[in-house]
Length: 222
Image 1 (cartoon, rainbow, N blue to C red):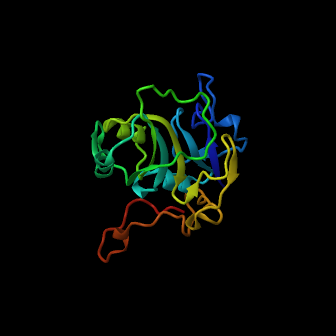
Image 2 (image 1 turned 120 degrees about the vertical axis):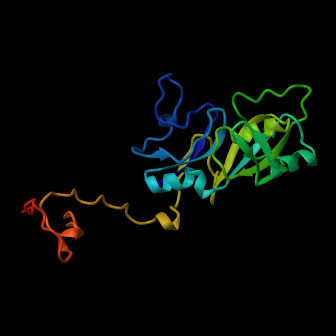
Image 3 (image 1 turned 180 degrees about the vertical axis):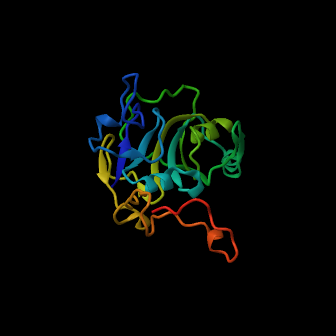
């Protein structure tokens, strides 16, 4: 199973929380599903959930470079040089990072956030369409802050081929599995039983079959 979920603002990307904060359990009744990747509590948008461990790993592990698209409401409108810095990379505390794409875009057609972002009178806000292929903590926010354009609101609208379109905040819908992950889940191999012959039996030492080798003093296992 694979679900697309529109995570609202203020919701944790997990099913339990010791501080009584709002979690995924409020919106998703399906048992035994897990988020493939995360969204910060103060971010919104597309979250994928699955009961397939291999698919969860493929979506969330940085090795597989699954692209993620974001709409970011910025405190200031960046100039062309700032956009180039985002594309070519900036130095962060945990290493260099960059956006695969960073360009100005119209305001997305989404419900207003509650509470609304705080926009100062001195701000010159704009919307940025930004794509990354990493999953480092708060990476989009840190990238934008590093070039002097703090993020006021952040919405993830795409993960790989899956998009947010058609989902209201708090809504979810089943999505087709990628081709490589279709079919039944692999079965666990049967437990190995000592003393049995066949594929699960322990292989004999090759040394006992060499010509002229000394026979083992340990009696064979029955």
